Length: 156
Image 1 (cartoon, helix red, strand yellow):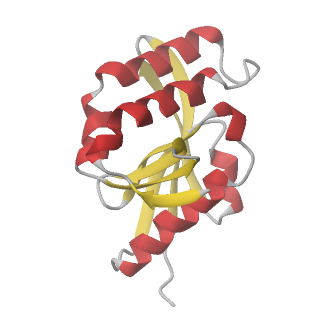
Image 2 (image 1 turned 60 degrees about the vertical axis):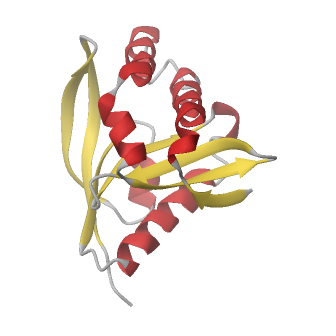
């Protein structure tokens, strides 16, 4: 797997990864309606676009196909964190999270925050993130639960 910084040219492919990631989720955790509401917003979402064009992010690719990505936007928040379904639970998330944390340390940030899904919050917990609270949000008229999380970044 290759790790490289995201550029604005990657935007369409990243949207495809986002869509695939959500559509691949277990329906025991997210219903068909939730997956449809969540994944469909990528095609016309100014926040997604800003995260790619104004944020800082990294992607993993295999044979030049993007398989996972993560961004920080604003600087102290992990805004996007997605992996194609067939590559989930194979270390992509851990690799990207460590890279984002390392870059934030180099930039002198004190902490990072995120809103983690019912899927990704376990990865964050495993990497010493803390839950601030569970939240309910509405996406395309459908309710979702997620976790507001934070991590203090220790400078070596």
